[in-house]
Length: 96
Ligand code: FES
Image (cartoon, rainbow, N blue to C red; front, side, top):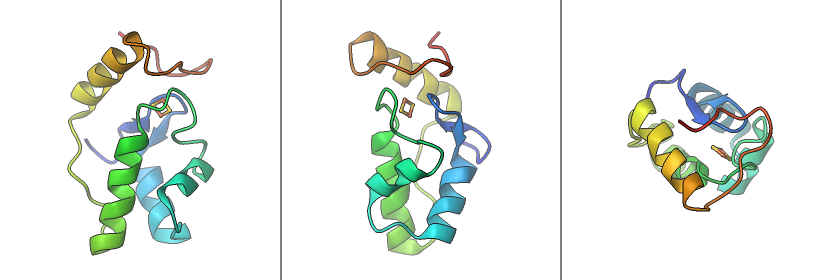
């Protein structure tokens, strides 16, 4: 996943926004990433990835984490939503 790919497809929050939020705001818990443009507060798909980035930022102060490609990520989210994992809000990136 590149920095300009959307990490939260519900609220169009890019990985770059999350990494910068982690670097600048230094949240104390992963759940505080919801203050970054609502990341993670829609269908819930991205929460595990937000947590990975949060943990990576604490461990190495880099904000890097092993994330799938943007296409794989979107496909996995679509499967998650289709299986009843969450409901995207209006305006979210649609599932394919
Ligand atoms: S992709 Fe982030 S809440 Fe749905």
